View 1: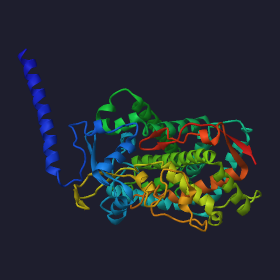
View 2 (view 1 turned 30 degrees about the vertical axis):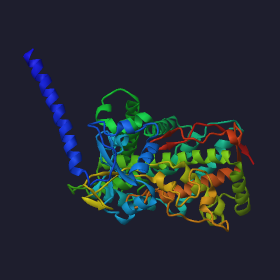
View 3 (view 1 turned 180 degrees about the vertical axis):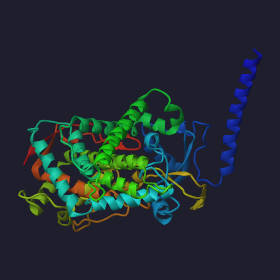
View 4 (view 1 turned 90 degrees about the horizontal axis):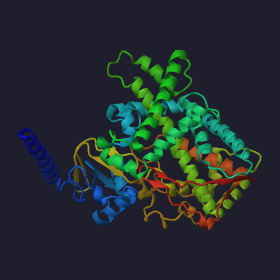
Length: 494
């Protein structure tokens, strides 16, 4: 009896100490960090946040606290940046200070600070430099990769023709095609569209990516230290991520057995060669763990973001058939029907280029960006951000900044056209982020979006099961990612 009483007293003392420490830390930083709602111990500002609509919740806080504010996602303290001015000042004007990588809890479960996307410091710099150079070596940004995309677009057109106008869900048609482009670089070859292992990989990618957008995914962002031990959808996401890593590990083992150091076939070979060159360096970042995670980073990023953007694109074009008709007219006039589109065609196709930009702006696929982290004690505006503070640069708030886009909530290609109907750039077009950790796959993504969209519309009309006014373009989920609603459509030959 006495022992249980002492245990209860000890537990109460520990809880009291935790509360007092939390209050003391908040007061110590008060007046230094940006303003924000007062957090509760452990749960932070959970009660003020809607995990179904996390971005909207943060935007409502902006109305009260301004474009730079502090929020607590459970025990995580986050500084949120909203609007073009705040994001630009941080990621461009103070690029070095904001170049660290914060946490994306679902992916961090697997990557744990390894790989090009989720690493920090010297590791991040070395892996990023190597990845950019190696992608260039395998044709990214050159004619070689354009021909690869054109070839893959041809396979996609055949697949759509094979549906004979039936209504289909385009999700895996698009992910197979997009994934094959990055697969040809990292694995050295494309997959057959009916390859069951390939389809399983795409299902795992889609599942884990969509989980990060769900309400449970946002809860996991806040309370991962507890939830990773509990049953729930997060365990399925972990299983899917582990399955993807296991596949990459199998590919790496195959390459190790057949490697010719004088003739690299793909990204994996190039990394293995670098590992051999640095095997006597005890501090090298070129080891098996970083190879697995960097390859997986490229595989996921090179598949899900572009295929999701294309799914948004088809939906929006069916909602706005006048926009589709104008693209058809421009494609017919500039390209015709007897040759494949080329990337250079875009300079003569301002309307199509404007539509692609508007699809990316409106779709807002990664609205909160990947979290950043300040690399040292940083003065930002009138605030003090201690080293290690996590930062959410809200890319969605930039893509919807009314100072740059006249009707930010509406889909309108005129946002990227001048009075003469020519394409106009916008500084607030930031779907690939900006600064030192911008997406280095931007060039590849732009080429894929243009070539896939124009090739499809050169060959097909898009037909919905609904009339345009009845098509709902509200997102299915908005969290780390913005996921379009499920839909079917028919590809009718032109």
